[in-house]
Length: 168
Image (cartoon, rainbow, N blue to C red):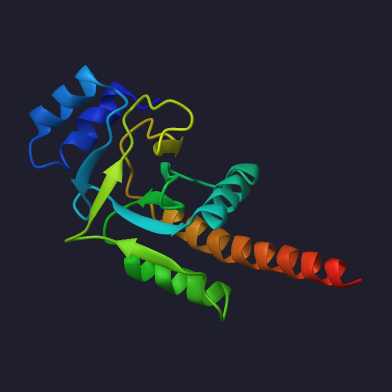
């Protein structure tokens, strides 16, 4: 569940903060479209990779930040501090020669945020809710880049193993 303080903070990314808060107070399941780039950027990746990445971040006690899922599109998104695209890309590139597929959304991009209280199985849901406004620590961006690359290698290795065992 997203906190009231986080709702107020997220509303600032909308075109009309008062309307944004009113919609979520009337229907806390209602997803809303907000712009990326001012308060946060978003790293979007394939659903299985995003879920594995979040799991690995949590297991290791690394800063994960808020994460969301769009079940219909099969995508996950991670909110990161704004303006950290270069840091994220350098981190991923240092970790692997074959970076996993991702999109980095910043200025000029929009993202659909789940409501603060979605029900399990809703199309848009928080995997890791925003409990407090994002802080501008580069550690969250670095941790995400490192773990995204590591999780992609883990998934690829598991798939190769599965193929090898099927041939045996």
